[in-house]
Amino acid sequence: MKALCSKLDSLLPNTPTSREGAALPLPDRLDEAANYIKSLQGRLERMKERKRQLLESEGSSRGRGSEERGGMRLPQIEVQDLGSGFRVVIISSPGDRLLFYEAVRVLEEEGGEILNANFLVVGDKAFHSIHSMVADPRGGSEASKVLERLKKACHPCC
Image (cartoon, rainbow, N blue to C red; front, side, top):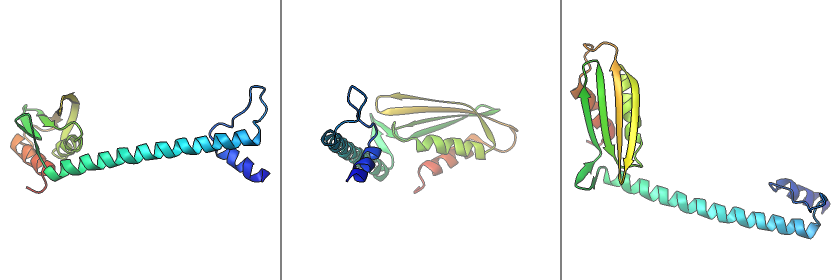
C-alpha cells in the first residue's frame, strides 16, 4: 500500500505539503489526487469540445470551397507585376492560413525571394500581402502565370 501511495504521489504535479514542510497525511494526499484527476477530466472534456468545434468549422469551410462574405466571394487573389517582382494580395477568411503558405510556395517556385509578408484581420476577413523579388525579371515569370498557379493551388478542384 505504501508503494502504491508513493507511486500516486510521484504522478501528481506538486506533492502537497503542510505548512510545516512535512508531508500531508495519507487521506489528504488521496483527496488531492482525486481533485487533480477531476481537474484533468474537466480539462480533457473542454479540449474535446474545442477539437469538435474546430473540426466542424474546418469541415464546413472545406465543404463550401469559397464563401460569400459581405457581398464578396472569398478567397480573392490579386497578383501585381512590379517589374522586378510581384505583389500578391489575398483576401480570405481569418482561419484559412493555407492560402498564405501556398502563395509563398508558388512565389518561391517561380524564382521569387520573399521580401516581406504582412496580414491584417478585419472582422471576418484576413488580408495577406506578400512582396517578392525575382532574380531575373525577364526570366519568364509573369503575373498571369503566377496568378493561374495560385488559383490552382487555392482551388484544386477547378
